Image (cartoon, rainbow, N blue to C red; front, side):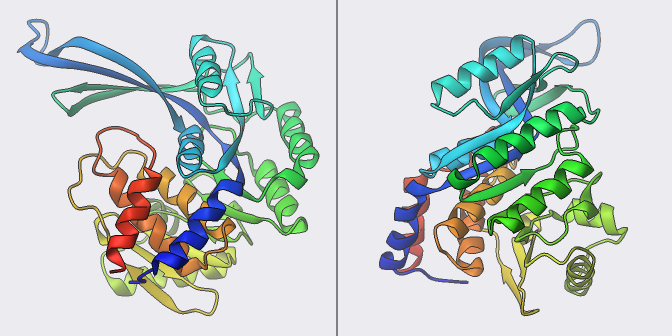
Length: 331
């Protein structure tokens, strides 16, 4: 595992401030209903949650943006929300967090994607999803591409954050990758199943274990299978780098020179894995845009994911805690 000198960390973290990262993908609102359980319902064998608090947070691609902001960068969210109460809440959260809103497009024909989590005594009881998975319209695709072209001099890197909610269509994926390559931009991908094999020739392709198993139809139940999967994905998609996240087994990085690096997990006490993938792609891209090499960026991102897994709910990484933990690791 890579050890950082404090000087090297200062070089990387100081450049976070100048990073303007476009996050294109499925914007979501995360609703948290916190309560307590004192009895079982007489109507059905389920707990009765007495609500004590309700809170709203960015989810999906918007949570990737929150991680970028928490690290000191400037997120440029590009996505779609509905003309509904939840869309209004996302708009208010963007104002509250000083996010640019020009890349957000309203669609009156689809609801804002919402995930409602009910948590009692720090235990996740149930999740309720509201969503429309149809592809966005050609008109909105064109608006997104026009917005990118108008802002290409203000973007240091692009993240494609796919949750299979219809925002990232095949055509949009291909056009954005072409745009990034023609403008010499870093472009990283957090994929899902539907468009898995559309993300060709990107800087970093970052699937998790389940996504890789589903896409390739093989079980990653041994190191040999992991290496086989990595080789197949490199051949099919031709990314500069492939970063396979493996849950409790950490990450495996497949370099452009065919070398492989295993990075062990850093979570000391796992409370909740929600949002860990968002933290990885945000931190990885921020580090690359700040001049870190791929092994440095993957190591920093791996630790960032470990830190957020120690918190309940979807929370962005704490920049100062991440920095200090890396400093301590290097001693």
